[in-house]
Length: 161
Picture 1 (cartoon, rainbow, N blue to C red):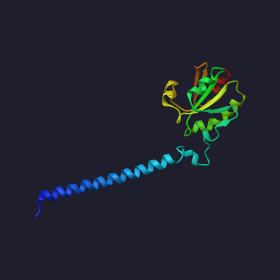
Picture 2: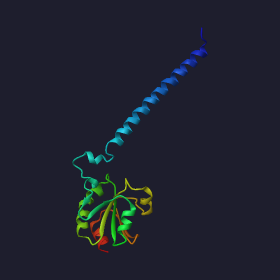
Picture 3: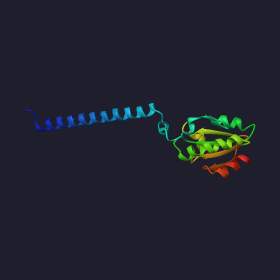
Picture 4: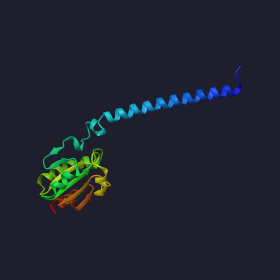
């Protein structure tokens, strides 16, 4: 007949095995959940019809979507450029989009928008982006001025500088 220690050892092995099974099931569940999240659109506002998303119409008159820092640095060589740093989940960014598009249509400067979720993080650090939306005026690859927030009067002044 097995000793008491053998039963304790078998019980411990069963508990450890059950614990491993629970951990394995938890891992599989979390993996499936994360896969389903990344397989769908990462922007949760896209699935709602009542909330417009900034990236829904990438090319509006006067407001152009860009993908990298080199795009706006190249554009700033010829003329001043105002770059809107935004994220699709930002409510203020979403609300500012029509206003910026209207201003861009009549502005003397090029107005560009860059999605910070898709842009490299070192670019946000380089330009001091800590809040959204942030507007940066760039001329000849040099930052001339920065505006944090969607203040229409200050944005208009930045575009007219």
